[in-house]
Amino acid sequence: MPQFQDLVVGEAVYYARERAVGLIYTTYERGRHKRPGVQLLLSDGRDLSGFSAEEADQFLQPLGDTGLRYEFANVGQLARDYQRGVFSQAFHNARVLLMRQLASTEPPAK
Image (tube, rainbow, N blue to C red):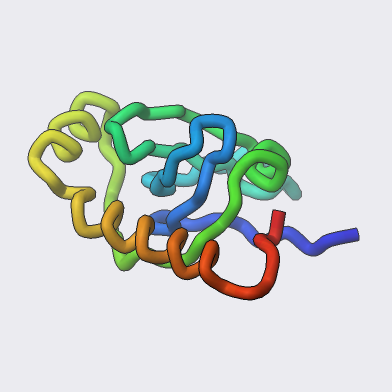
């Protein structure tokens, strides 16, 4: 059985269903003894909202840390921050991480 790692704010992921890179912009508690869920922002600015830890394991391919440090306040602020370019460097880093993974000789983790 594979060991899954909790995703953290600033981590880049590849979401195959949308063929897009995304950033974890916040995590949320799901109850005692449950792994945290994550919320995902795609590079085109769409907020895909929440993924439970189990859904993240199934649908999101971790790429690595982008260096983003972000404190989520609300969806309005998230949209304004996206428009202001707050996530631009992190999305650039996410694309680099994806290209490195695609160029590696090892198959992706998922």
